Image (cartoon, rainbow, N blue to C red; front, side, top):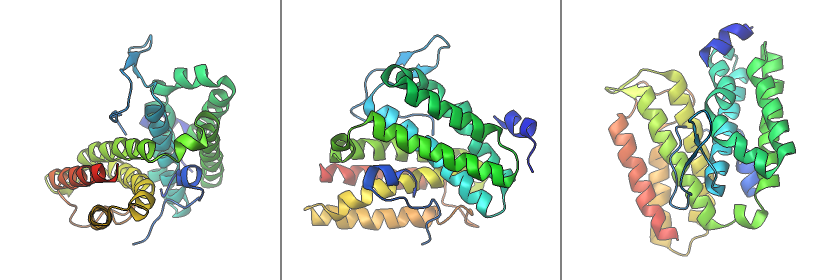
Amino acid sequence: MIPGHARKSAAALLLVGTLVGTAPLVDRSGFTFVRGALASAPNEDASGIEAVTSDEGVAAKLLAIRSELAVARTLLRRGAPERAAPHLLAPLEELWSPIHETLESRDEAVETRLEERLAEAAGAEGRAEMDRAATAAMTAVEDALSALFPRTLRDSSGFRLALVRILLDDAVRAYASGVAMGRLVDTTAYERAYGLAGTAEELLRPLAESSSEREVAAALQELMSELRTALPSLEPPAAPLPAGRFQALVSRIELRMGGLV
């Protein structure tokens, strides 16, 4: 059992179920917010926190929240509640403030339900309770995405590509926090990068597979395979890819993504 006060002091295959009609687990075998090209100009709330108001910005932040919860649930089911705890705290403590006013203005009932579920996840104690709370919060995120963004928008390639870019940029930042000088320095940050990259991959893969640009699609498939090699699982590799090379890999993916538009 992880005491509540101890965790509170700490601070895809993921949401693809809502976006592409399946509900895969985070564990696939084998954030900091960065705006996509379509994002609106930033706003600041009374606390000075940069508010996220664009559709793709809000959706990406919800995906990042869902990613944290899914990583936490997988770790819980592997018997690692101490590693799961920071991922249950992060949605409310790190990711919520930039979007809560936007959500409230769009659908107050959705915002209230989601905040309640995230608070329950952050305060849960014991593996069973933590697992139940994480699952309930993941469902609340999926419900929020369905309520706030019409299917036509969620299915559009431009919207998905904008989300992929944001998620990959967030993964780069998380990875740089987790890996320094060619060695692991922060397991939680590495786990966050793994979750974000997995979500981005699941959004990107169907776009590449259905593209008529076969050369671009093949190149993206190869690059995503390299990404999976860099982030093979929630267990960090013995010799992690240096952060600079990881960033360069993501840059190559994003460059190739331009050929899908």
